[in-house]
Length: 322
Image 1: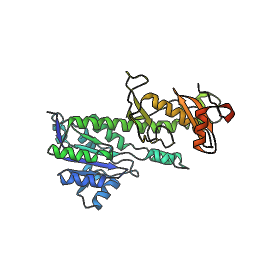
Image 2 (image 1 turned 30 degrees about the horizontal axis):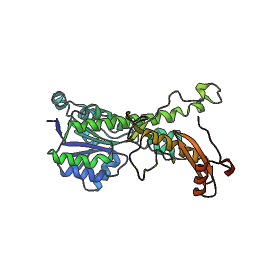
Image 3 (image 1 turned 60 degrees about the vertical axis):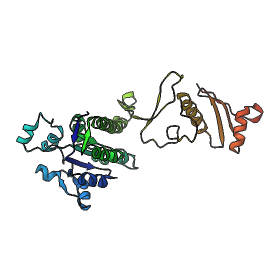
Image 4 (image 1 turned 90 degrees about the vertical axis):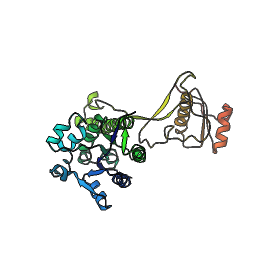
């Protein structure tokens, strides 16, 4: 039987509050004690939920405009404490075990994407306490559940109902993976933002070190498994940049047909990126990711006809891809 850990006390501190009230209500209805911070605590209290402010629990107030809230031994000791091994030292120092941590981080990406965002604005949206709690809980996933995605709220409640208020080790491990992915992506965004400012700090330097960031962090999430890879005996998956908005094969929706293969993705990408080069109605026909018929016209149908026939007298624009 998988190791189960009952959830008796949860700490909730979220920037994105979508679904948090309903989740907290579900936890409270199942006898879970709620700890919380700042705006999250006020929201839960306003909804009539019994919630203890972290500052009341630690006996230490929030300070420095909220920069220091949860960085306290009674918080991290409760998260990192190993059940059955650290119980004595926890009792000695009045540290209560925290069985679940629900955290999502300051909206750094949204902040720096805003027009006119200053360096000071960006700095104030670098979360410190949040990632620290996330990593602490993920490290101690054998005893603690870490929740960073609101899409997991319902599944967690359902599993608790199926296991008398407990979560399995398999679930806690899966949640820990999501947590480490979350903090890795968050730190990558911050590093990329500061790295992009290298030219400004080097002024008019013509040296390469003054024009490009020292590191470039890329983060991709799996969109789907492919039917097969470049060849039918190979396996493949399609990964995309998170939060990408530009029209591309990564943001496209498949309307019909069987599951895609690697070759389907490569062909679609080549065709779409080529057709995006034109302002007129255009059609691109590809084979093995190479455009073999490209045409423009006053209508999509005529553009398709020209690309398909690929006759010089129809003024077809031929493209070659290397």
